[in-house]
Amino acid sequence: METCIINSPLGFTKIVGDNDGISQVTVLNSEENITDIIPSELEDCATQLQEYFDGSRKTFDLKLNPQGTDFQKRVWNQLETIPYGKTISYLNLSKQLGDVKAIRAAASANGKNPLWIIVPCHRVIGSDGSLTGYAGGLHRKQWLLEHESPYKQQSLF
Image (cartoon, rainbow, N blue to C red; front, top):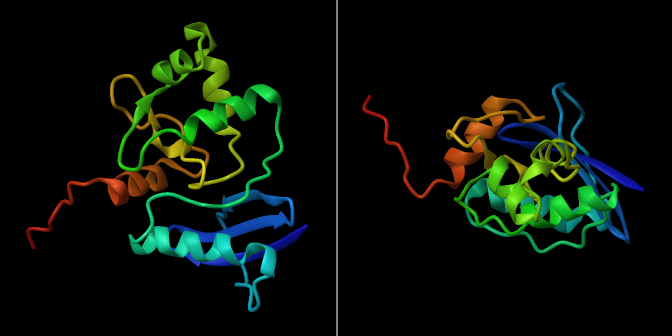
């Protein structure tokens, strides 16, 4: 497995993967040394993340290889269908998976998503529109949703 650390507007980001695909993208809560030379297996991921943060990319085109249970992978695959700039509720996510009673299991799998931003778990919100639960911190979830919003708030000052 290859690893690199890049900087993003939300903090240092760790990318892990190999020729089988990207297995992990996580935001770190500590300062790390940025990787000088990004391994070739991770270059596309680093570039596409930078394009996302620059606002020029809305979808990712990467070979992914997340590790998880079959149910977790079903949830993560479903998350990939949420369009850029849109949100769904945890309840709707469980309905899309075919079992409204699986809301807690779907929320748990959502929280274990190993591919930050690429598999857009930040696009799942509470039924009342609240920003509930986010492994990267609610301030990052809010930033990501505002970044993707077609309605940009202008500063008055």
